[in-house]
Amino acid sequence: MQLIDEIQWVLRNARLSAADPALRSAAGFAQGNGVATAVHRAQVGRWERGHVVVTRQLVRRYERVLDLDEGTLLTAVDLFGRARSPVRSVAVLSRTAEPDTDRALLLLERALSEDRMTGLDWDELTDALGRIGRPLVRARDWEALLRRLLEETSLGLGIGYAQRSEALARLVGHARSGPVVAAMAAEVTARPDAQFYNDPLGMLHHTDHPEAVSVVLDQLRRPTNPSVLRACLIVMTTLVKGQRLDGDVRLEAARLGVQHLRDPDLPYRVHRGAANLVRALGIATPRLATVLTAEDRRVAASIVRDGRAISAEAFRTAVKRIRAELEDVGGHESMEEPVLAHLLETSLGSTDEGERGSALGILMVSPQAHVVGRVQARALADALGQKDVVAAHESLTILSWLGQPEDLDLFERVSLGNGTPTDVATTAGYVLGNTVEPRSPRREARDAAVALRVAEVMATGSGHDDGDLVRSLVYALGMRGRYDLVQSLADALPVEPSEPDAGLVPPALDPATRPGPDGVARGILGYWLGLPEHLRPDGGLA
Image (cartoon, rainbow, N blue to C red; front, side, top):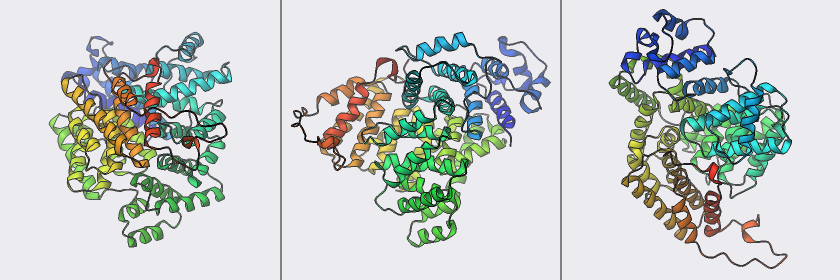
């Protein structure tokens, strides 16, 4: 399958799933819905299935006629292109033949100020910078661009997240960014109090700078914490697949991957990342799978051998449910599309988080997002009822992208329940934060319940897992715009002790110790309260 096939599917899928049934037929769509020039119905077929040059203007026509937010389909096109070409500094379909330097300068000045930037602003700016080639931007301003866009990506939701994520990948892939990106990744991996690891380390997917490998290998040898380790395992898997690493590097990566895979003290998501790395390296895979099976580690063995954690039966059940739901809303034609079938197979079945993230990003901006999200919420409920922690984790991974507001009561129960395994509750907290909810008394009550649970964990918790749970639940409050509740939690913390005597190392900074629960919570709450106004999420209410 070629990129043109995927782009044509984006157009065809959007039309067949149009909110207005009159626009779903080629004849109805060809009329232009009063916002585009009418064409013959045969032209729609040529656009969607013929050998034609697809332009940005054509994709924008589809967005306007179908009354979609600007960039919805263009972002899907870029995500397909990114999956094929991880290191690329320009859009798949650029706006004009030559970049508008005056417009780029205006956007650059805005990005370096305290003005808000939209996902579309970042899309336009990064495409222009990529096509200019060697823009006259000071080194410190270039780094400031990367840092701001990275933070906005970490705090983004929905189409805004997808646009910023693609824009960040472009900026990272620019010839000027390699050393800066490697240094930023090294900086965040050294900080146990960092709030986000996936997005900072995810930048390394999109650069071919040699220092990137060194950063990842150092963490595989001596991980800062399980969250950093998981992120570095994902990146190393991509590096293994995307370039020819030195033989010694591959050998050490294999040894470290097996070591982390067999460490019983590491959480499931780290084991999943390690299994994917070992599978990608392909070193003694059948033999290792046999050993893992003998150790009653069948899930790890399944990932190493087949690249899948859930059973074939669970996968077939999910697809069957999705098909039934799509038929109910008149979208049965879409299930026959090979592009959609591949996206679903990767999103629902694969454990490779790089490939899976690309597929889920595309589904997130596609018409099928609602159906797939609702089906996965049911799968999560089933998994929890059967006490299948692995299946619960796999569903939550999908729901972190595709969670729907109708299922927020479930996400709340899972993330706040005292009986929920801590690592499952932690992941569910991120799902809760990523799911946009309209303002209502129920939303107010939910936010209050999250804050109460954070206070309980801060009062009784003492381990790293508890710190991760606090981080995820405070993330939910921050993403939902509840800085008032975050401030209340910070105000309830004990007063910090006075400064230590000169020459003594504060415990929170001593690498030989871990910060206590109050120190962890103080850092987490302080991050959200310290966010400048122009970067704060609005809770999806704006």
